[in-house]
Image 1 (tube, rainbow, N blue to C red):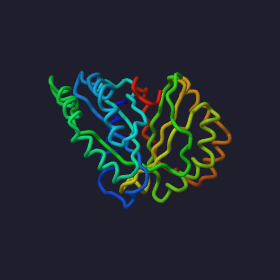
Image 2 (cartoon, one colour; image 1 turned 60 degrees about the vertical axis):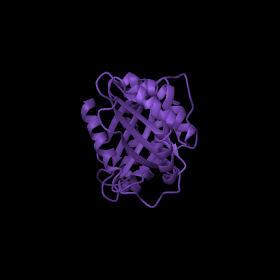
Image 3 (cartoon, rainbow, N blue to C red; image 1 turned 180 degrees about the vertical axis):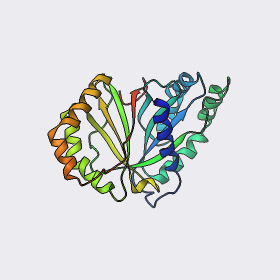
Image 4 (spheres, one colour; image 1 turned 135 degrees about the vertical axis):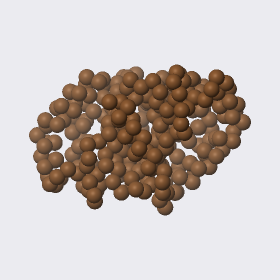
Length: 249
């Protein structure tokens, strides 16, 4: 099941880098997925913990959150914030050419490369209804859930409206915290994809929350009022736990 979810997620993200839009001066987020060689995930954590995070910040990239999908032994998912697409390009160039990074990178690969394939990346822009509150470190633990929706043709606006006007409040009502909602910035995903991350107190709590949400009469009414037929395909859903070095815990 996890392999199928991650395969679907990878396919979505790989498409995200195909064509840039004209939005190169607005704040953007970058969702990245790393897949390691067998037994190398802990080495990757060490490199991020001891070197990469500080170097990202040094070069103008803001660390938002770092997660490992539930049960995974080879995958790291993380989100960065950039001032713009132009700034992102300059930051990555400066990062890769930093002697400190080059030294840390080389040292981490003495026993072989950590990654089994190049990182997957997609750029995202916050929706107008994404929460304004800042993500903070916490001691609550819990589970995070990354969900990706592909709207039916010409239905992304209606999907956004349902989240904006109904879904987010109902999530909070049933114990799920809204953290961020994004649209892809690049074609073809910018026309029909919605990405979001929510928080659950635990895996059991997530199951209860979703069960209560689906059964809520207010949700049923909102779903019915949003139009005939599905607004989106069934979402890709990945449960994740924050790493010990994540800004989100």
